[in-house]
Length: 166
Ligand code: 2AL
Image (cartoon, rainbow, N blue to C red):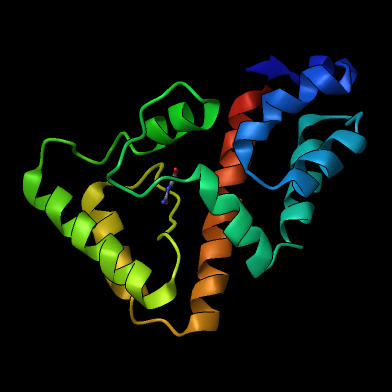
């Protein structure tokens, strides 16, 4: 976590890798960097949120590269892998039945919508995620793009708030 004042004054080349793990959408990262300095934390979060409102299906596809499947906790020490492990920490890795149901649900979702099931995992148990997955399988295409983008916004803003403090 770095202070906003520090973030405001870092050279671009040092600030970029700090926020890059928030979301794999280069346009969002660039715009957030260009808009510095922010007068306070709320101004940063407001602007970041405003930028996320412009996302559509193309941005969703771009972003999924940084979001491993639920239940597949990524190894590796890339910054987004560590964030993802932390976000999924309430999914019980030792519950074999849950793991199998998530695997099946993910596969059905991918067969239906052609992309990875995305949900803000922080604050949700594995059972809650499974229930949401089942409900979302009944969505139409457009409805599910809207829902996935909302989840992506929540993940991104939570990550940003975890990277840059007051
Ligand atoms: C994720 C992830 O990496 N973090 C999170 O909240 N959700 N992945 C996913 N497929 O939903």
